[in-house]
Image 1: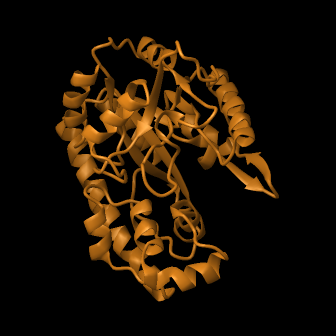
Image 2: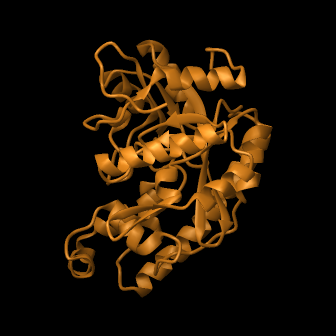
Length: 314
């Protein structure tokens, strides 16, 4: 299945969104209201290692007739220099097993954030943990750290010198915070198989998030697909792949959508899609891929439900 061109009669969804409970700018209520404004029929609340926003979103969604998919995004590491994010859909988000696991992961994220901040200080960037903690109302993740750095006037001159321009959050993350970058710190985390097993244990469907970034890189302006990384998560037991996701521009996005849709069909995986909406900085696209060619049809959600035998009440 490919993403579609916008059509007035079509129903569209977004299965990858974030709220203030991880690294989103909007409260769950505001996110649902925004989804209504842009004409979406369903959204998944998929915060990083946090499910606190789901109840609020569901309550608000009843007023607007929008379907909420209970979800979570879990980070896993097959090795110290590689991150694989797993989206868990239709999870029992109140499960004690899940909540204990997520609390443990959030604690490790906070410890890692302190080390990253120390690294950035040693690189002469002005940033302190208190500012990051104040910004992060829930799970602390990389965009929080990047945002605090790039919006601090004390860092303006250094940023201009390092980048040649004032970077956005994505620029800063790619230069300083990803595996192998100067300020990066690894942390104890789940392996991909463990993340998938956790999602399955609480009744969820495990989907490999944004492979267009995790399993593809650009060299000399050309996209290079790393299918070995994709095979890693297939072996971990994933049920689906977020093939309908974006790269920097329409051409690269179309190539990624085609490539990962083909791999999903080859491995008989469900195909999902989402904007990875955050609402600040440069993380993700606009909700529902507004002002972009790609759209995720409601059929994606119907087929996902059909695969797992879930009813529309979810």
